[in-house]
Length: 473
Image: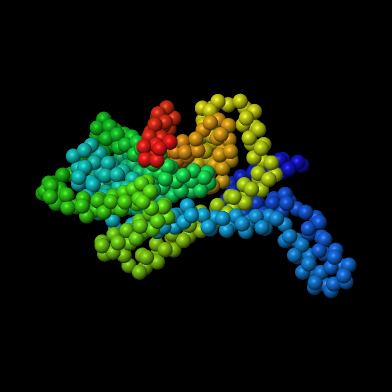
């Protein structure tokens, strides 16, 4: 087999193995080292020291040590060590554990239940008021955490039972929770965008600025859908019982908002503003957010030693997963490229004679399909780098491409068979709520994701206006 054929075998074998359920990060590292050993194998480097030791009459133990040393005298091990060091020393990735810590602290500070209760009262006269409150709470909480599973699970415990108790349709209520929980991977400060920036070399501050308008546009489309559906078909979302909230004055409502909505909103805006306007690096802003999350938790008297330990543990665990994915992915990609696999993919795509639009459609279709079996982290770290070298050929801006991917990956949590948001919600939903109902409730939001992608493609200013206004061209 030629080296390019070995590279394609390497990629196909990797996809087959992860489909069997093996851990992705360690599969990447094992295959990168295994195929890299073949790619960088040098018989002279391996056997020459051993032959010299034999000629010098070395004893058996020395010969064994020399053979072991020669076996590991392969450049793949140097590459693996260097890749590990590069990941751990990456300034952009430093922001990940800090943003995660901020999110986990906020999750455990009982801020979200206060927020949902307050917004439910504030929106009580709107059609589908509880759904509107749930979506806004999901969006704000998802933005603060960036952890889809945490948002869907917590909101599934808080808002979903409340909506069912108010006789909301199961499909309608479940769709709101699932779709709202995924917004955090798009709206800054998004951890997914940090990972994409590290993978593509794109400026994280420009990515954040470029994602703001599309992110709020998508959330706005969700809100419009909820209100219109509830208006056209009131049986989906019966009007809220106003008897308990009629006695609340405007002053009391303002105080409730001041103590629930505004602290979290101000914290997010402070972190995001510090990044966008160059007042702090992403890592520094994330540190501010982590400190702010702790202050909020203590202010609400919700932080205990056990909750602090849980927040630290979960932050470290998730960060380790992302970092080892990077190590494995970069090792795998380096070997894949060295064997000529990147040129095979490039020549194949170029040979298809695609227009830029056709290339974008093909790339987004592949990413959409990959979202069925894989998480966003694996897609961004492993598969997106395959497309990045092709972007200059089709005159596609990595910033624009990244925002389309961030929109597209919303669907990976909403589309069966592996719609993780649906499984998160099913895990804590009442037994009578079927998984098929949750899938059905999520699908209209998939259509709105596609609509937002069409709007972004046809109106690129949605992505470029804010970055160019703040930073210039």
